[in-house]
Image: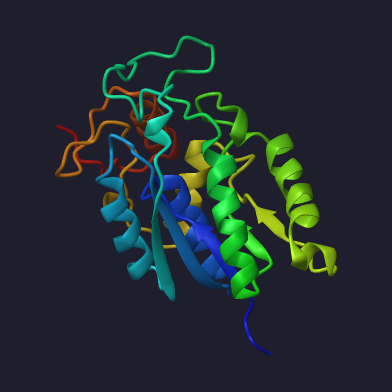
Length: 224
């Protein structure tokens, strides 16, 4: 019996690397997808390609789209400073419709490949409050995939796999360690420099540092 195919969204960060490792453990043939969308931390794209190669993806695609053309996020607009503290509201690092756009591309590729599973490393526990990281969003997109594709109309339902959705950052890290992930290769920082060194103060860095602390695992992140 041929192993099933999956499209895995890989950003180069800790969460998506763990989602890829889980897909591999479940014996999916993994095709990975990352996006150059105008983010200021584009060095993560190098990590995404390296992680995909190291973790046995059969194919890695990097798609260029210009979400920065709309602005509205500190991750795509260099005139907006990346915040160093959470305000309790949805932060300005939220990129409008980003996961909707990413999953749409992944859905198109999955239909071409004949894959029914799409993996995404979103998390609804230790995260910054983004609306497109919630269970309701994942469920709604899965329903959309059924309605919007030829495969869905023919009864071949798509599954949006979000294995990290209800895990804390520490639980994600422990799972990744069990799966043998080298987290020193991942880049999570919203403003990492060209050498991949993290700032240590943005939301993403703070969640990551706390996760390693809570997991009782040494933090391998390179900070500048």
